[in-house]
Structure formats: structure tokens, C-alpha cells
Length: 179
Image (tube, rainbow, N blue to C red):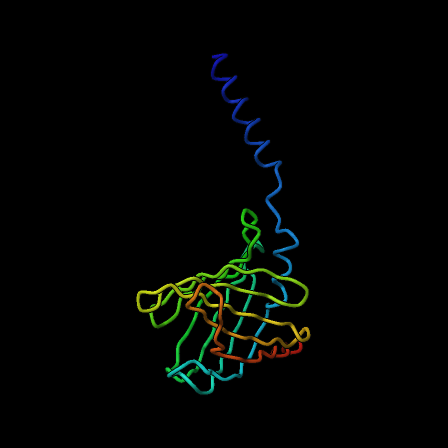
């Protein structure tokens, strides 16, 4: 009987200590992602070989429950055709890098690692193209709270030289007034 009472008391105390711990909270690096929350329109031009022409998108970004990640959805138009993307932005405290994981309606997935300095986000994607390693660098420069530019470049020689593939401007769509 003493064993049962002791066991029950131990479980009760363990339960209380578990409930007493506060859930984790996002750090300042995660809070920096708040810049992207909301709806955005993109207008730009692709200069990639064989894919030259206008590009545009509408994007929507919101916090995932818990506040550690942003979830984004976009509808895109490009010289190659229309496509949709679902993406997640976050921060990896182990590597001290921002993360971007995206999945599109063409069956592709993209994983990028990023950094932020001053007013500029820099993202690197390492992939294979026609059996050869390729790096892609996306540079997003915050112009204001409601506008940023994107430059998309690629390199097939380990980052020694970069070719410009796309440049665009994102403009935040004003929120509808509350009633």
C-alpha cells in the first residue's frame, strides 16, 4: 500500500513540475521574420536562358501556431507557366541560419539556408542541374516596411561567377480596415 501511495505521489509531483515549465518562446531571430507577414504582390522579369519574360506572384504569409515559423502560399506566373507554392520560413538555432522549405505544384521541393544583415536577406540553395552541382543565391533587400527587391542568381562553378536569372519587386498589399 505504501508503494502505491508513493508511486501516486511521485506521478503527481512529476505532473506538476512538467506543467510548471513554460513552453518555449521564439527568439529575436524568429521575430525578424515578422517583416514578411501579410499579403504581397510581385512583379519582375526573368532573364534566365530560355525562360526570358515577365514574372508575377501573389503571396500570403502568416505565423504558424506557436510563433516559430511562417507559412506561405503563392500563386505564380512565369514564362514557363503558372504554378503554386507552399513554403515554411523559420530559424535553426543550431546552425544559426534561417530556413526556407518550399513545395510547388510542379512536384519540386526547394530547401534554402539564409542569413540576414542590415536590410538584406541572402538565401543559398544547393542543387543538381543536368547532373552538375548548381548554387542559387537569392538576395532580398528591404526597401521599406512595404517593399523589397529580389535578385535571383545562379552559379555552376562553386560560386566563383554568378549569372542573373531574375529580378523583381515585392509590394505589400495594405490590410483591409477593421470594422
